[in-house]
Image (cartoon, rainbow, N blue to C red; front, side):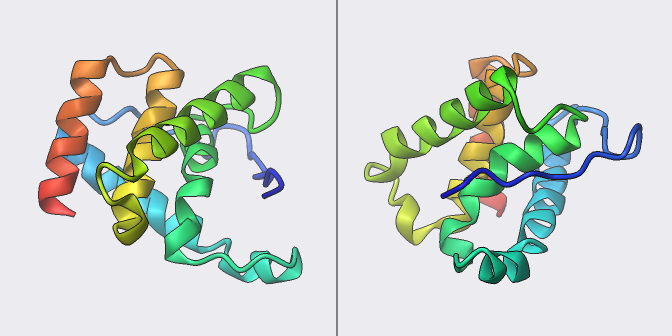
Length: 133
């Protein structure tokens, strides 16, 4: 799937980092809604964007929400890390049948790659989201 580019408006996209798992879930719900806005554009690119493959957009939305560039070395690292987390966890956690959890995993994985979370924080967020999403 080709890399999507999100336009960045100076100062308008950067969000404060959530401070607890409940606030992370609130932001992740906003991130899912933001990613879903891309569905009509997938058709123009010859790709159908569904909830089942929405996780591909999670690292890009994470970069957008943090006010980071969606192209370049940092973006490549974030995207690769997030999607690698999906591959590693997909079968064990049944992510193909749990698309929103797949999105959460990639979104949180992107923040790990950005060094904005440590593994303990990421795990707490994932557990909370799995229980409340």
